[in-house]
Image 1 (cartoon, one colour):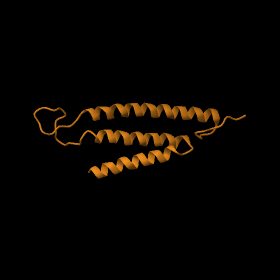
Image 2 (cartoon, helix red, strand yellow):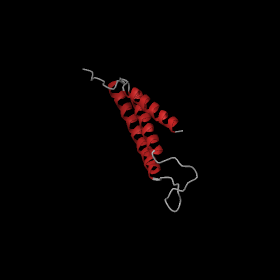
Image 3 (cartoon, one colour):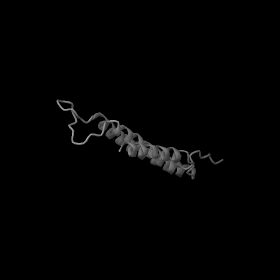
Image 4 (cartoon, helix red, strand yellow):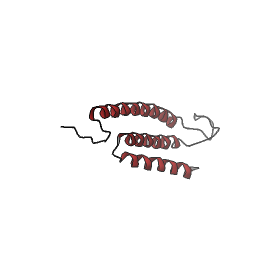
Amino acid sequence: MEALLASAIGMLAACGVFLLLRARTFPVILGLTMLSYAVNLFLFVSGRLVFNAPPLLRNYERYADPLPQALVLTAIVIGFGMTAYLIMLSLRALSESGDDHVDAKEKS
């Protein structure tokens, strides 16, 4: 299970970095989204995946840590907001410059 999760995190991060290096705006936004998914999955897995265990430490031997779950929930909300902002910013840049390259030059 750990190897599957580690490979999923690695693939998401690798695809995200690959898409970040593209010259168009949509693949860059998609790469940032995939990279944020990789980070969210890493934070979630760092909370020790435990089934049928209480989220608080009491008189139990096994417990699930609720902090990574709260961090991932917050990161999902922030990531959604940033993705919406980047999409609107790229649409504005497309309408003003007429090109969707990341390093669009101004027309003289």
